[in-house]
Length: 268
Image 1 (cartoon, rainbow, N blue to C red):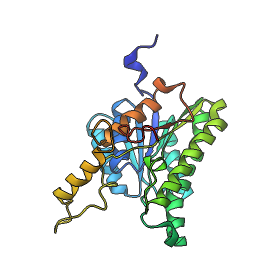
Image 2: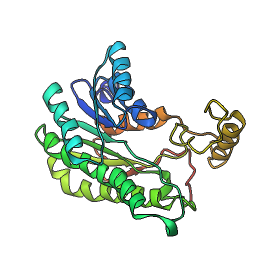
Image 3: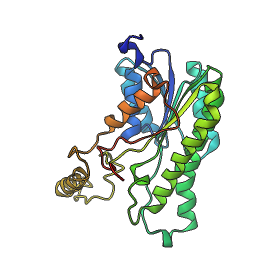
Image 4: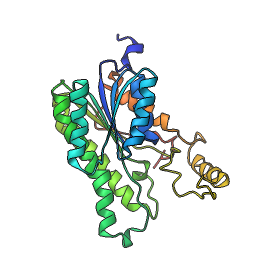
């Protein structure tokens, strides 16, 4: 039986993480690096990604950062190529980058639809497409996409985001069927309420632009009430699940949507 302390280790592995400058992406990059992976961080915020990579290096890990707009195929290809060039290959990719979309479906403009689809759907697809040949060359790998709890809990005014994240879920199901014979596993997270800047964007702000404490308390309370555990998630809760999916501990898992949401969708 494998040593349990080694099953979750990623020593010798190379990982790419998009959306790595903040939130879940940042936590994923930090956890994978702590588990021994060499990590390439991509984000539209290149300076933010470099700051995270620098912190990882200062903690003893190996990390590089590169600006990346996931809506541009060439930039995603370049991010994966950086992993192969500087670290020798690719074993794990975490397609975390995404954007919210607010507003009723009946009034969405073509520009808004195109923007959100380009980032949330095409950006994820580009990451998968770039990863496949690099992983196949190493005998396999793990692709981890990020869907959303919104695929299970429809909310008025949030339809476009839900549509794109449902597309990510179906992309994951379908791709797992296509690449399993090359040793590549494909899974997705569907995070529930996880407190990051992404989820706090619509909360009230004070004169300095900081989130209003009362508004945040009310928001957290409403999210806690949806969970049987009576709690909300932190970015690291999602990152630990990514570690499982990136490691040998999940070697028999593919084509699945993993719901780390505190039980908010139980029975739905």
